[in-house]
Image (cartoon, rainbow, N blue to C red):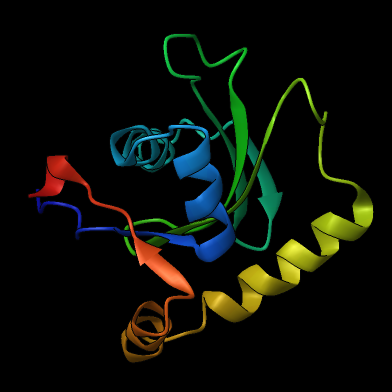
Length: 132
C-alpha cells in the first residue's frame, strides 16, 4: 500500500488574519484537513468546496468555528473563509455560488501558479508538523 501524497495546506490572506486574531493555530487547521482526508467531512458543499469545524481554543468543536475550504483529496486544501457558529449559521446562496466558482478556478491552478500566489502574499502556507 502506497502512502498518500503530501497534501499542501494554505490559507488566503483574509483567513490568515482571521486565524491569527482568533488564535487558531496551524496545528488546528492541519487537524481539520487531516479529518477531511480521512473522509470525516462536516459538509460537502460541491465543486471541491467543504465546510469543516475548528475547535475554539480551550473549547470543543461545537462552540467553535466553521471554516470553508477549497479541497482536493491528496493534493491541496485552501482555507478561504470562517465564522463563529454564534455569528452566522451558514453561507447564503450568493456566498456559496461565489465560493464554488472560486473553488473551480483554484483547483485548476498548477503548483507554479500557487507558488506565485504565495510569493505575492495572497496565499500563506499552513505548517503541518505531522508531515515534517
